[in-house]
Image (cartoon, rainbow, N blue to C red; front, side, top):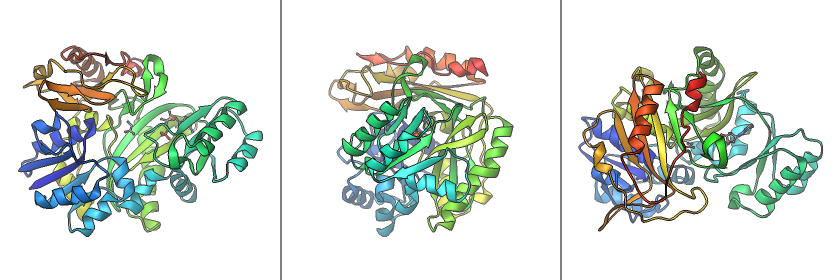
Length: 424
Ligand code: AMP
Ligand code: GLY
């Protein structure tokens, strides 16, 4: 079978590596891809993920049997619908289901309507009404731009003044563009965060092993929010009790709610959970694999990924027994210093060959590009260095060891990925 992956980061590289392991995949394609993906798939770096016409033309030219749409923007923008209308077999939610990630107001209203545990909230279209609401609100409080904002449209405000400035930033100054036409203001919650990814076929859900992200740029969870600076799987804080609660009140309830709304979800639902003193609560939904979550979860999955993808598309996920290795994985992101604000690109990366032939180590490319001088940095997040091990501590030691194998100018990483493991 010939498969096309849409996307070009570490997540897509991890998906490509999983697909490459499948006996059923003869040829892999990826747009735009990156230098790492290009080692196992044919890529066209000139095609952007929002260039739907060019993606359709490429899929036709290569006569692919399946398209996997990985990033949020094309999912929310309806690429799956466009490809399906052209007769392609596609993995990923269509536009009306991807709204689960595309609109925070939609997802909050869904949770309220179907009694799925989440923070209390109000939605605002009018900044004046938001300001009036803040007069009597409790602080800290959380402001969220409704639409997609690269994971940055969330402001945690400790005082009324901060929150008022936040309303201005989101709704009036439009810092996050049209994502800020509406806003959710919600109760501030405390607790550990866990990411739980799942496969969904419209009615059945299968949960993958848990993970914990590190969203802030700097050690000690300081600095700005990023797409994720590293993570580990499984989370020791995702206990059986938590799992039981989520199975009872969150996972299937979400899938059923989407179906009941006439928006059956086929693809990956990512549950961003907070383990509060009052039990697990949904922080957010994503309609896709997380990045770097995919980099620690997929290397631990025992199933042939193509079997699971097929089951999601065909509505036969109830017949799949999803299994994960009884081990652990840690991913440390090597970024370009200055990420997520401003950073330089184009530095030559050395040492990549040291990963060749090493079973427990993965060097997932995020922002890289092949040039005449070799592979160079081409983004804020450059590489995801992942290692598996018998337990989290072993995996962490191996991942950090491997971060030393590669080098490039302005190489930056957090040194405390997985620190929480010591507190478990
Ligand atoms: P989101 O994009 O909704 O996941 O939010 C990004 C980050 O903001 C989360 O990973 C949390 O760390 C934080 N956050 C979001 N909502 C809340 C909340 N209600 N209470 C506390 N922290 C939150
Ligand atoms: N790592 C978080 C995300 O992919 O949204």
